[in-house]
Amino acid sequence: MASMKTTSIPPPLAITSIHFSPSLTTTAIPLMPPFLPPPASMSCLNAPFVQILCIPPSIRQELGDIRCLALEKVAESLELPCKYYSLGCPEIFPYYSKLKHESQCNFRPYSCPYAGSECAVVGDIPFLVAHLRDDHKVDMHTGCTFNHRYVKANPREVENATWMLTVFHCFGQYFCLHFEAFQLGMAPVYMAFLRFMGDENEARSYSYSLEVGANGRKLTWEGTPRSIRDSHRKVRDSHDGLIIQRNMALFFSGGDRKELKLRVTGRIWKEQQNSEAGVCIPNLCS
Image (cartoon, rainbow, N blue to C red):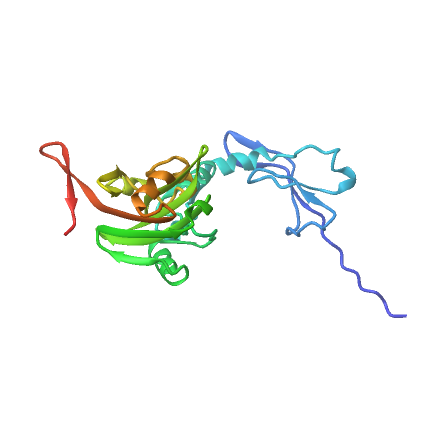
């Protein structure tokens, strides 16, 4: 009869004393064999960075969280690079402040700013510009002034819609012009606004104006473009742009007021600080 070979699994090793520093000593910490994922019948509780606890269902309610304070202390002293270091972030942080930094890191990818549909694409600005042009077929315009005409038949049927009209390239930067139709309280309105393709700090260096009018009347808006870090819905809900009530928009459209024909003009300029006078001087592109 052939003999059966058996393989014995070595028991967990044990360390009777671990010295991380003169003020930190922990006893009897088992070192388990290499980690294997738990079977489907076991669940892993949410745990800190150094605490992972898998408990079978039969005893899941009987064990509390098991924490390794020694390793948590070690984690507090770890300094790790930002996960966006490959995108240019040079910062190094203690572990527990690293997570907060990464949620606000200026080097984190941008979300696609297209407002006509939900888009999950993320990337840097050059990538998103190409994505908007090639995938969303957004119009590209070079220059800091614009004159856009918007025509819509049966405007009373449009209660909640959003359009991304154009991407402008000026001062070496990119800006997105949006136009939305929605309800402001009980009143149907249209709203036009500009977003800056970059961070909020950079956006503050620029200003823009929008104007719409006809028949001897006009509405004008002037402000600072919002960063695409803020979603178009967030900008819309904050009413940070040129808002036109539907009746006024139809008045500007002329005719029998059954068709929307709005001409939106605007310009973008860069604020330059005059260090001697202490004032901002607008830099208008030619």
